[in-house]
Amino acid sequence: MSRNRLVRLVGALGLVGVIATYWLGLFVTPNAKLFGSLVRLLYIHPSMAWVAFVAYGMAFCSSLLYLWPRTRHARFDRLAGASAEVGVVFTGLTLVTGSIWGRTTWGVWWTWDPLLTTTALLFVLYLGYLALRRVPGDPEVVARRSAIAALIAFVDVPVVYFSVTWWRSLHQPPTVDLAGRHLYVHGIMAFTLFLSFVSFTLVYAWLTAHRYRLAALSEREEDEGLDLALEERRAEGVLA
Amino acid sequence: MSGYVEAGYLVVTIGLGGYAVSLLARQRAARARLQPRRRPPVEERPEPEEKR
Amino acid sequence: MWHDAFLVAGKDLRIELRSKVALNQVVPFAAVVILLFGLALGPNRAVLSPAAAGLFWVAVLLSSVLATQRSFAVEAADGARDGLRLSGLDPAGIFLGKAAAVAGELIVLEALLSVGVAVLYGLELTGALVLIATCLAATVGLAAVGVTYGAIASGLRIKETLLPLLFLPVAAPVLLGATKAWDEALTGRPGAGAGWLGLLVVFAVIYVAVGIVAFGPLLEEA
Image (cartoon, rainbow over all chains, first blue to last red; front, side):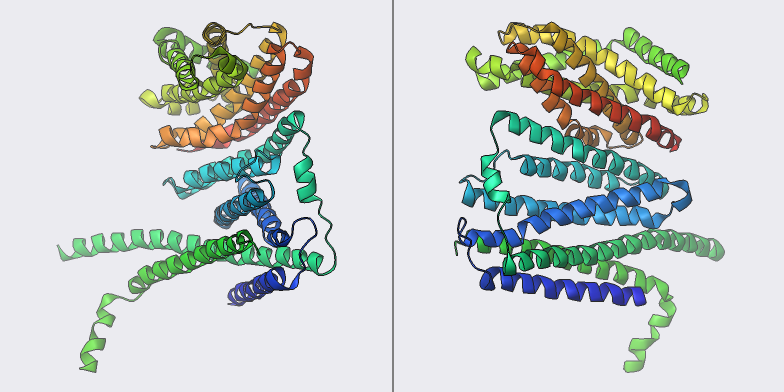
């Protein structure tokens, strides 16, 4: 039960943190010189991306732990799946908020900015991973091939990032994103940014814990469903 | 404010909130499907009769 | 390991030589893709020839999905997969062999396709050395990723739709690197493509290593 309370605590802290972030971000922090009120997007967009990468890192680590024979346990498989799914949600939000940022600062909904492009590729990469996880089969087999797919996907992340960055920078110097990324933040702005990172990470932990629980429940459901069916068959046998 | 900012916050709220709610709802549904199986159906039947 | 790889590659290539599925289906498919790009972009050579490298590599990428699927369809028939598992061959060797066979088929396809692109898009194939080196490095990478994912997807009933979704995003760096290296070579600056060639080699090394490690556990599964 203590784990249950921990999850609840994390959820409550995350919720309070997010509300505080919203309040600080929308009403308290000042407008920036260069971006005006748009700077307020800064309190949600980078933290989405950060959480997405944390989630994928988590999925990668638990996949490794699953593949390592000594630590092989169904819980790591569940954790990998849960973390990756939450990561995909956050990646989607990263794309949407990034796109809004792009629309307002560069005037277009999409630029082939290295980070944005990498994120988009990550999004489809992990959609594929989740699709693979959903394919039914022997739980252990599903777990093993999912773990390997997670490995392949995660190894691809730096390669994709490096190549996409290189691809863009050869064409045009990334002056726009220099202005966009190296923004001078200080005081209350820095605190709000920090708070957003912490509270969205807590939200991630809460969501992952619940996704994990859901996975455990549905696994149990399948097991019990089989047991139940077996019992019913046996009962029929006795009656006859 | 420009409207874009609010849209961004709204998208994040709806996205995360919607996902959280869907997770909780799916958990509830899974629990509800598990629960009746736990108790044998014989025990559940007498209850409404007693209330009458 | 190398001996086993040699055996498996020989087996796959022999099957291909007799059935000619890659030659009769995958190569024409790539040709269709190239033609469709031409139709989509219009007959203007000023548009087509700068984009030629990218279009060529997209066609190769799509064809490599088919080649991979074919490589595992061969194993699906007549319980060949079980035979492979029971053969006692080193899984790493099986991986290398299958990847080598796919790579061999793709190299032939690329040779034919590059002629097609040169003719259809009005291209002069300059910097042949860089072009060939790029093809080799990119193809090894593609074959390694493809065969690993093919093994992941091969036991599944819905592999036809799943494999492209898994494979293509991972192969995106290959598309970028190979296209850029080709672009540089075709515009007469073969030296500038060296960096991209390096990227392709790194990609190939990484995924050959991953495949060697991962293929054992993948083959074990039912």
